[in-house]
Image (cartoon, rainbow over all chains, first blue to last red; front, side, top):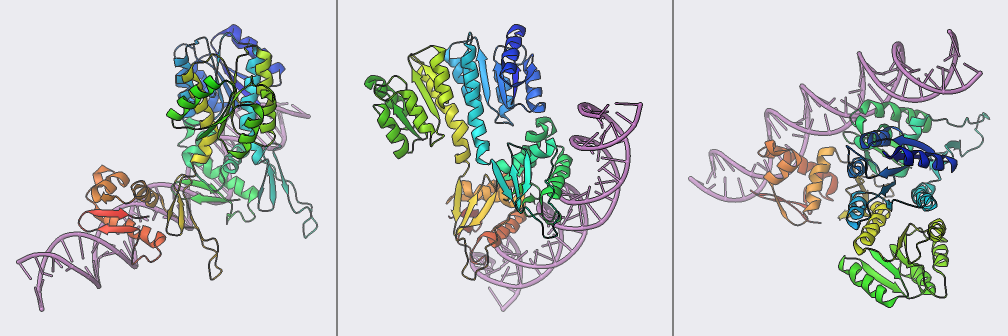
Length: 233
Length: 233
DNA sequence: GGTGGGCGTTAGGGATCCGTGAGGATGGGC
DNA sequence: GCCCATCCTCACGGATCCCTAACGCCCACC
C-alpha cells in the first residue's frame, strides 16, 4: 500500500516516513502543494496524507484538484483546531481531519480505517469472471476456469502489464456502466493526459487480445463510439 | 438518509435528533447497546452514530457485532480522549472517532464525509422508466424491464449515440414540461444553432424509433406544434 | 381546390472516431 | 554492456456518427 505524504515541515515529513515505512507502507513524499497534485496523479498512491499548512498552493486547493478526478482517501493534518476549517476541508472532499499535535498510533489507526473502507469495496470483486477467465484483482492473477483444454494443452495463465491492470481495474469496478475517455485516462494515466485517446485505443486492444475469446468481436469490452467504453461481465 | 443514534444520555440524544432532523436526516434512536445492535439490523440505517460510554453492552461490542455482518459507516462519540481507546475502536471497525465535547458543525461535516464515501455509489443509480424501458442516465444504459419476451427472443438493450443521449437528457430532466425548440437546440447543439429546427426533427424521430413502442404513434415524446416538444413518462 | 408552411422520414456524403500494425524510446535485471 | 519487457508514437484502412438535401404528408389559410 502506497501513501503520499505532503508536508512542508521536513522534520515531521521524516518522522512520518520512518514510521509509515516501519509499518510496511510504501511512502512517496511531496514538499509543497503543486508537487502533491503532480504525484497524486503520477505515483498512483492508495492514500493521501495532506498537511493543510503548506506555502504557495493551498492545501484546500490540493483537495479540490485531486477530487476533480480521483476518489482516493484523503487524510488531512492541520495545526488549526477551529471547526470552520475542518468543515471546509471535509466538505471539499477530505475523508478525515487530524489536528496537530497528534498521537502517532491514533494517526496510524485512522489510516488503517481509511484503507479498510476503500479496500472493502475492492474485496467485493475479489474474483470476477470474464467469460471463462477468473480475475483476482488483489492477487493480480488471471486463471482459466476450465482447467483442461479439449486438445489437452494446458491453458497458459494470462499475464498483464501494470498499466493493463490499472485499466482493467477501472472496468471491473464499474461493471455495466459507461466509462468516458476522460474518466479512464484520468484514472490510469493522470489528469494531464485526459486528451490522449491514443493510449486508450492501444491498451483496450491489448486487454481484448488477452481476455476476449474472439478479440475482433468483443463481448466484454464494448466501445461506445464518441463517448468511451463499457465493461459487460 | 437514515441515521441510527445510539446514546444513553437522553439530553444529547435529543439534541442530536433535533439537529439531524433539521438537516433532512431520518433519525432512529437506541438507548443502549443491545437496542443499538437490534436496530442496526432491523431499521436498515445508512449510518451509525455510536456513543462508546453506554452501560451494559459495551460500545466496542456494538462495533464488533455490527461489523460481523455489515459495512455501514460507524461514527463513534466518546468522552475518552486517550489514544488507546481511539485505536481500539477504529481497529474494531469504526470509521471515525469524535471526542466530546464536540462542535456540532464538525460532526455534521464528518457525517457528510462518510455519507459521501459510501452513498455516492448508490445515488448513481438514478433510473427513469419510459414505458417498459429503464433508463440510467449516469451509466448510459437502457434496459428492458421485462427480461424475457413472449417470443423468447432476448430483448436487445437499446443503444443511443452521444447526441441522442444529450437530447434525451434534456427530456428526462424536465418531465411533463414543454421544451421549446430554442431551449433544446441551444442545450444540445449550442446557442449558435438555435434556428436549425431540422436537427430536432431528425433526432426526435430517432429517439422515437428507438424508445417508443409504436414510433408512428408517439406516447412519450409528444410534439407541440409551433412551439416544441414535451416528454411524458 | 390550390397553396404554403410545419412536421416526419429517408438516403447519402463528409468528417470524426476507432482498430491495428510496426517501430522507436526508456528503464530494470543479468 | 546487453537483453528484455513495457510504454509510447505514428500512420493507415474501416466503421460510426453527424449533418445536408430532398421528398411526402397533414393542416390552415386564401
